[in-house]
Image (cartoon, rainbow, N blue to C red):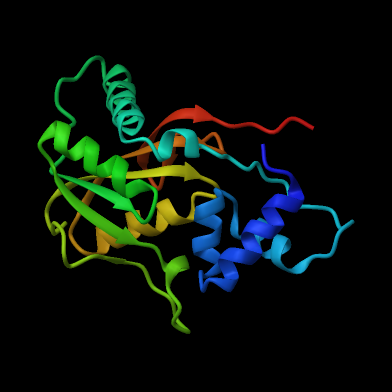
Length: 200
């Protein structure tokens, strides 16, 4: 596990490389609040309540990622009484970490791939999220949203809202790690492989 000093240094280096705080939060699997604290607070201040998840041993290995994608599909099917089909047209990978998982799930299940860029990655004064025009369209399509971690649930809610405003039908959310212990976001069921709890 990374020490607090290591996390502060990693956050500072990412900021120096030009990453937004939202991108840093994604890279470190931390909340925006925690990243802000890492970048601005001196030693000794009380850290926000958060849990850092380092899954790079798996995320950098394509074979292991493929196994994780299979586990996500199996988790969904087990919750749906062994349903053979995901009943979806498009896998939506949330940039960045959701993209490889959505790609692998889509390839295995014969679904199209779409990429969502969350508002927290934008650098404009009025940041908004968007679906990449280089991948599948989402209009009138049944969509499964894929990401690595739910920290606050805000990004998932943002994607669901975007899909509904643009004619997409969000049917499920697949995540590896759920830091909130939630079963749905805005009426869309969440299927997580792991729920992370902090006990003080």
